[in-house]
Length: 160
Image (cartoon, rainbow, N blue to C red; front, side):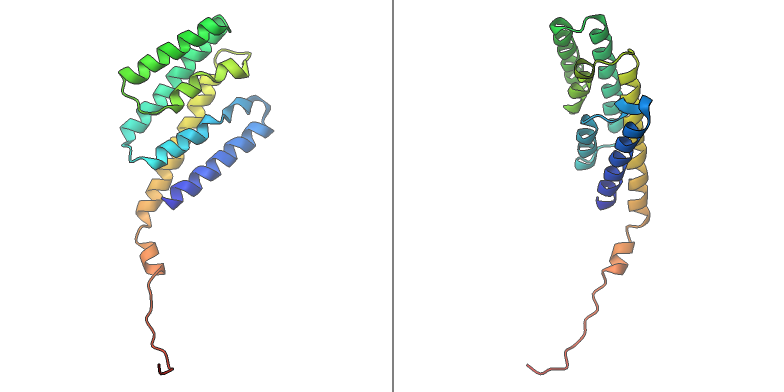
């Protein structure tokens, strides 16, 4: 679990650095990425569930982007909320950050329709690859801590 935690922290730092230093990648970093990271490491999901949640997030960001592009007002926000909540319940996606991702276009006001869905897709794809690599490393080296933490019992020279 520690390797996954460190890997996710490094990944989020990398995404933040990229979003600051590359002008067209500004929307790659979004606060909900941290929520997805914590969700993915705190529960024992199968890979298919993780992919389903990631696809649900990309889909919800598409819905939010399309409806915000159509009409950036209260009505489109309401429709986004209703559609995404319906999809979360219907597909049994137990991942509240999916709804938060759908709302990103309403407070960032992107100039292009495709920016937010593509950013969400890229960031979550990178997160899944990072987690997969961390899980592989954990499995590969799971016997290593037992070798390092071996307790050697020594007897004291003093008499009690």
